Image (tube, rainbow, N blue to C red; front, side, top):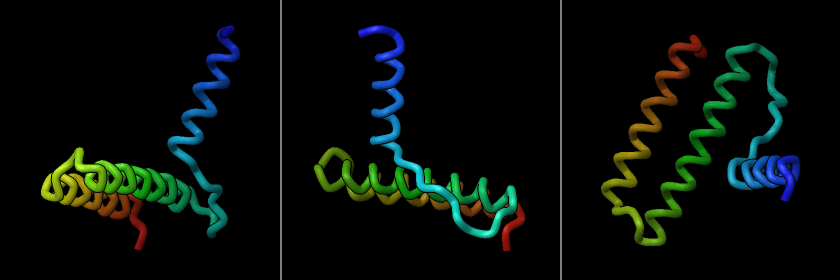
Length: 83
């Protein structure tokens, strides 16, 4: 594989593992940033759920990690001053 092929493969793999949807809501920079944070939150929660479902993560650890992610998302919303 050439470097360009490696780069394309990694980009495609990243898009597959971490899909992003376009934002169609009211445009404000803070809304766009929050939407990106929200999409990351949902992707990470999904991964935690999958790990817990497959027995690779205990329910307690999954809950703790999701709670931490939720607090980070709430902090992001507050810092962006979104009501």
